[in-house]
Length: 393
Image 1 (spheres, one colour):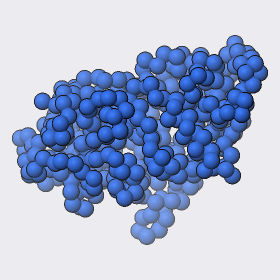
Image 2: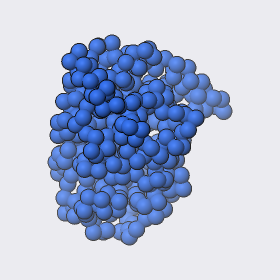
Image 3: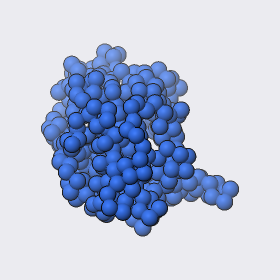
């Protein structure tokens, strides 16, 4: 990939074990095979949501993804008898290490058959590449940071993932652990029905705080989108600065993500809380676009016709679930009930707009304040995701 730092010398046997060979995916054909492998792996899994192929190509294109302005990724493919049986990316994120004062290598985009030889070959190839650059430990999966899709699903395989959340076969946790990985941190997802009224005690407390502190909650102004993005950006990078795994987005990253997310925004569900006119908190809830993406099957066109696009558009009209992606509060305004106010207003609006409910994800397992707040509003933990770590021998 463009921007790569020092690389170990390529070998057709890099990271290979037994009859499996693992090699860097450097040619255009290899990169296309890297993108296409999950479509084969999950072909018979009814819960998997095929991402749009064009979006995956853009995500891995250093000319289109601003993460590559500072980060480096090396893609690897595992083959057996010439057939692709797995993939992985070695990842270097200097901003993460600078922000946290760590020296960690990362990996992501792991996919594999239920085969320890394949999995071990992939993990060892990524580890070898990271070791050559001086990293003693690897953390992941991160695609390519916690600002994007990350983690392994370990509990809650019964339903399709919410938009921008990870999904994988049930055998992945066992593969990770058989290859020497241990838990670094668990991430939680909560399910909440909009039809379930929040506890009256929570409502009374939230309304008291709203009146006493002069809290004004308003929807994003789409007519002033660029300025609103800047306001949200300022809150975002200040709100999670002390959280495990967080790394601030660059201006280019945030603007790029905002552009991609704009078509999904329901203004009434992207809320900004102001105190004395100052934006101090926000929450972002979007329709669960995975429902529509599943209908498209990964492609907007087939046989030269916009078949996937039509299917996506028709399915988008039937979306009834949401995902609350993020809720952030500036330092100095926390523990004042702003989270309860934003949750209440989101639930009320979701009900009014005809949504049945949705998912709040993700939260850190040890963020007790946030998790208790969600549970007090009627949220029920529905899925557990895990980020793993392993020393690089």
